[in-house]
Image 1 (spheres, rainbow over the protein chains, first blue to last red):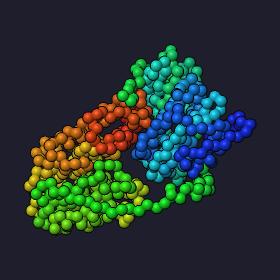
Image 2 (image 1 turned 180 degrees about the horizontal axis):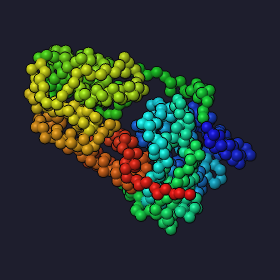
Image 3 (image 1 turned 45 degrees about the vertical axis):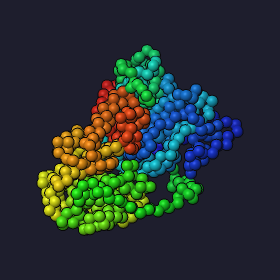
Image 4 (image 1 turned 90 degrees about the vertical axis):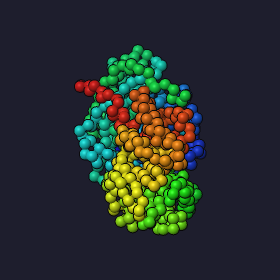
Length: 264
Length: 317
């Protein structure tokens, strides 16, 4: 697990406030709250904030692919989103940096047991704002082999990218999915092997959104981001996995609006 | 950032005692309602499988014959199957001599543990699916229902059902070998009373579930059932259908989820957002609608994304 180490080092290198703040009590009463909060938030101010919305189903129908959407658009100055599940063996799933993009991210993750699933949103001032829910899951999301390993065809489609774009005002919503086994390293005889970073750019190379991705993101990872797009341009997507392979593709400018009336 | 076992153990010890407290199951108390001559319906709870209901959510049927009672769908667990056997004896006066398992799902199939496997009959496709998925489903049921599942071993039906006319204990049935809700879906028409026992091909005022569904086959199966003259329809879940509305309602739901899932994928919604889509008012009477909609999103979304989202043009450096 080389990448996570680098990730931790990056967190540790964040400017620590002179006097570390006391952690607020966890409304989810998680046994791992203190453990994760101390490591992830490194002494910066932490609060539970209703402006952070985390959307997920009421049950984990498939613990190998549990959908989560995080929307921090109501929180001015959000610059980073960390998605984590306290009781997963690989707790952090995603560390997202919307560079010229909304603080919104959706993906599917693995769950290894009943656990809080949380969104931690960091503002420009370094403070962290959290939301989360307990979700019940039966075991094995991280410790069972991915379907493509069982089927044996994972290598045939490795790195294939699918996606599309939809207008959302002056922005564009992009849904991007990759074929990748996203091996956790927790299954016997299959070493960890996952996509570990993804960048979305304008066709001219300007980066719009960047994320670190960990082994607890579901097999064939899919992401939704909402990027600035006043000029309706084409995009490029690039990703690298822990084996050093790079995958990239280009997306034509969006031509249709996002589905309206989510909550009529 | 991998957690060490030590860190997890320390955390587990810190859990409040209440969260770790053992819960004990209650008792199954199934009740039989007479619906036609020598035919009783046993209603399941119109809810998801939960510890509180012991998983007793599927409907069963008891049919009296000269050779013994026919039990259509034996419940979810050993003790549930035993309770249904006792109920059968009580209302018909004659023990269960034949058990039909409509399909592989545990709420219908796992109560077979209470019976001699030689009297348990199912479609060959159902036996194959139980061989494939039974162990995994069993783990999931023990996880959800804990103590309620005590002693429930997976029993594979040893008798084969074939499509067509059949007689048991002097009572004439027509058997239907269909699929769509799962890979093998058995339905039974009781000729004497014109009662169609539909298994999970038909839901009534309870949202259909789709973990192994193939929607085109399911619609074709509904066409077959609709074309079969019947007076009463006993659905897999929900109340008895006395006015020929349940098949239409099931088809309406399947059509709606199919169209809506495609619209959501093509319209750029993520899975989590799609799970929150408003459910039309005409489905207001369907129990567990939000729950089943979100399950269906989980069952179909990744496949539909693969089907509906185009491949990106590869960039060559």
